[in-house]
Length: 471
Image (cartoon, rainbow, N blue to C red):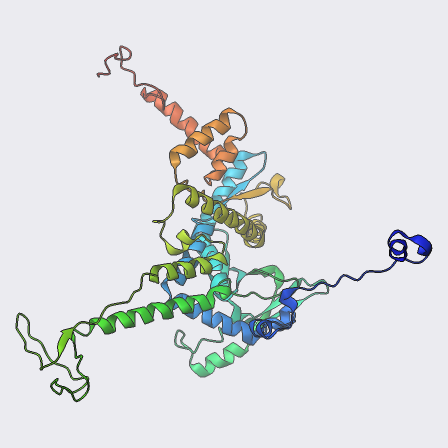
């Protein structure tokens, strides 16, 4: 009864309940020799302490070296920049006056072409991959042909060693060196001594003129880390393994044959000097020393797992960039339609997110600076439209569908059942729906004028359609 009383309350009903302590643990937090070795590099540094100037310098230099010497790394970085920026983002204003909006859009497009804005956007993205961050200085370029002299000057991370922040953590100004610290004077008229002095001198630039393009991965992170840092060691493994396989294959190919014997040392076989070489003429019979046989080295490299190993390394390399394997490898031979389509959906979603980040961080700042200068030009922007905020959006290149026929049918279905609009469908292709409709109207009018059949209609002869299909 004592046990039952304790279970069901019994005479101890008025006593305080017994507290049961549940002891649990995380295997990853256990202090075992294996764990200590595996996570020996783990630390509790803050973002600033973990990303000192020396550490960022080492990471930048190694990433740049790998991209310059590894064709896969070079291709991955170039592909990502090309897929993200494409031929460039196109401005589309959302105002009631489409005539003025079209004129401003055309003027911005003309300016962006002259300053090579799309090329600089691609350089920003590839620079972030291999350097971690890139700075764009908004400056005036008097050599531009157009009336707007705004231009973007891109500088690398080393040329901006200091950033000053206000009490809210916002950048207040940037210290820009007069020359790149790594420039030894080889590409300039100044000598190395003068270049050293220039690298040590510089000037402060207000934050309103500087665009700092990088990705913060921790709260409070103020400087960028190359995007390919997690894959840096894997790139090195890929190159070393490829060279090792090639060396083994070349070594086996360098020997036409080898002499070997089953006789013991000092036996009946003739004496032959070890590692001696014999030149063999073409189309000839040769005799061998007594007791010796001729054979060839087996070319066992590359092994059957060579391709599999390289593919796995590339797959792991591309994962840190949200890039599918077939895009990173430039090879879709082992993909079917469904898997290729699924992988590209994830990749394209990642690109859309990065495009939005680039629009918010870079393009909106550039457009605001461009508008501020365009307002000062007589006749470009009417006074009634000189407002502080210009509603707009950026149109990027569309993604080509792997099966255009299926996409066209799906697009037609969406338009028929009212689940989409022409603006949305044209936006998928990176086109302005108003410009496209006006172009279609002009084509329609011209086809009527010339007596040409409309798309999808049967060709008409002067006497009507020919039932036999003849002319």
